[in-house]
Length: 59
Image 1 (cartoon, rainbow, N blue to C red):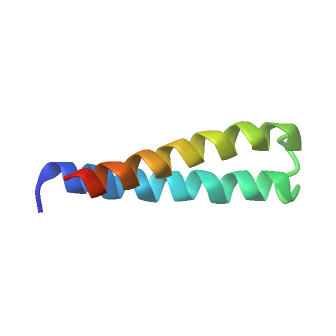
Image 2 (cartoon, rainbow, N blue to C red):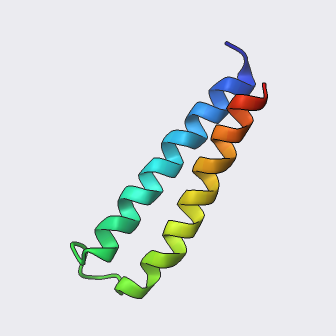
């Protein structure tokens, strides 16, 4: 396993965590953050996950 695969796995995990955090905000579980901010986090998390998956497949 080389460094690029490790970075892609870390980015994939970070993207999934961003999506989970955004869903918690969207469901209003976290009361301090307005739910309108969730859409930005969904977009950011989606971009990170898609980027890491594409990078893993390209080798």
